[in-house]
Length: 85
Image (tube, rainbow, N blue to C red; front, side, top):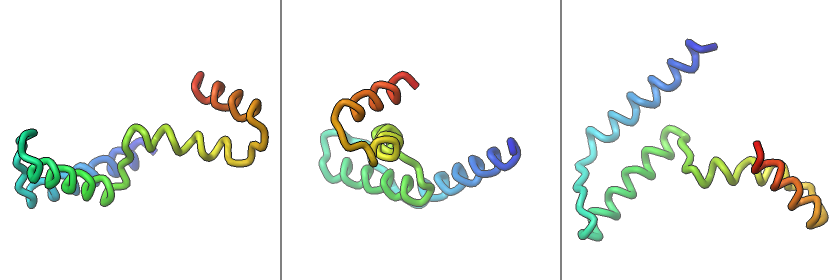
């Protein structure tokens, strides 16, 4: 199991390095075009490797655990339990 996890991470890393080698990235926070191009490269990288933003990793369990809850009290208690975990 650990070997499979390592191989998966290694594959994602190699894919990321391949994408970053192909793209020319200019890091200049004052240049809107450079910022947009950097954002596009990172978005492509995340999509190819199914990497999630921190907000997406938080949002997914909340949606799964709360999708069938009808009342507000139970919803808020469930959110509290998720926050503790």
